Image (cartoon, rainbow, N blue to C red; front, top):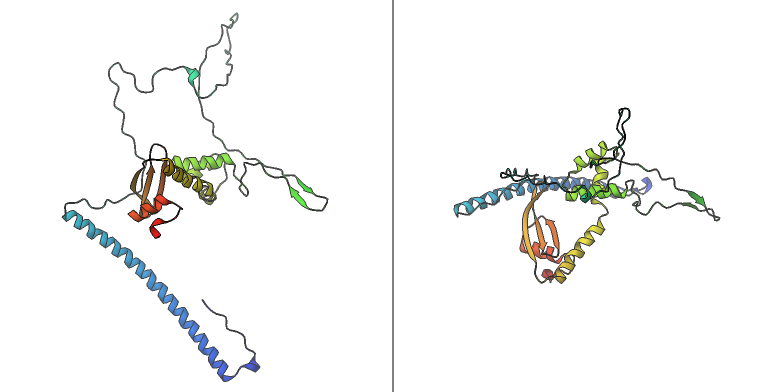
Length: 292
């Protein structure tokens, strides 16, 4: 940080004042040089610390191997696994999913479409219709231009008609699009680049930064609901099951702690796997008993 030296009029500058100003200027340059040197040393120390941590881990793995134990596994980014092929059906047995069932059991209510016979022969008559059930999926983007009425009150104040309640303040993306993004990313595991490519193909003009903000920003309600699920589950449960699973994120090893039973499930991802970390996850945002 460089301090601005005060301006001293020429008629008030004495040899002593000039000497002091020169001294202060020299000290500032010296401090700046020291700060840069400290930053360089800090960067080198971080690099060396990372190398030492890797060497220590290698030594621990070697000690575990010499003691007949398994070394710490190397965690790799998760990938979508290809399910194993199903075994062929036995003789006389139909393959799963091929059994006939009534079309009336479909989830969707069919829209009837009349298909007339083209170029019917002369003298032919209609003998009823035969049903043929078809299911399809239609996904497309939409855009709405809201024309908000602006009025002027008797006091000269300008007011705008409010947007519909399901439109988030300041957002130019509808609730269905936001819900689709969250579902596909959180539940389906679709990456953000693939989500953007899909939306662009559907005609939605959206950037990678906007997708990231929609998925991560202003999600306090979800975090609060998550904490309420954990608190309520612990209050009504006579027992819980816990598990720590290794996870890798942004090139670093981490841990995912699962807490739950038949009534609820709670998951928390952290960069540590220890007894203290488990106590932190278990107590959430409540009082830290282990700090007392």
